[in-house]
Image 1 (spheres, rainbow, N blue to C red):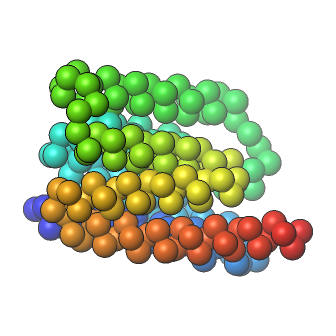
Image 2 (cartoon, one colour):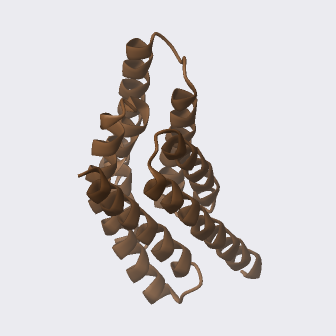
Length: 193
């Protein structure tokens, strides 16, 4: 079962990063389509990640993955509406769920371990910051999201290495390459505008 979860979570996550990265060099219509598919794939990959992370008592990372679903839905909504139809209620829900998930994961982990006492918790904090801020900035169509996704990928790759999940470690390193590519493409697009 662990192997299936690694393939499911890893491939969906990697495909999301590929679609986001490739979309940066496309015309607006295709870019929108690729990002919509990317957001949907990201959401569909979350259950596998949550199961794997909870299985290793990675409560910070698991709560962020689960709690990030509203941010992903906001990204999907904003992409569908070309970032022209902001929804204040939805934005508020995303903010509350993000901070609520963050508080839950950190407090539960600190309570369970008696503080921040392990390297895995430090790596989870890197995953948390990278995921939350990366998803938030990507949902807002900001290139800063790419930088935070890089932090997330490197932190998660290290965490997966420590927990003997080679498939997910490799997937995170491949994702990092696509995130780096997407960041470069988005920077070039901004510089050309």
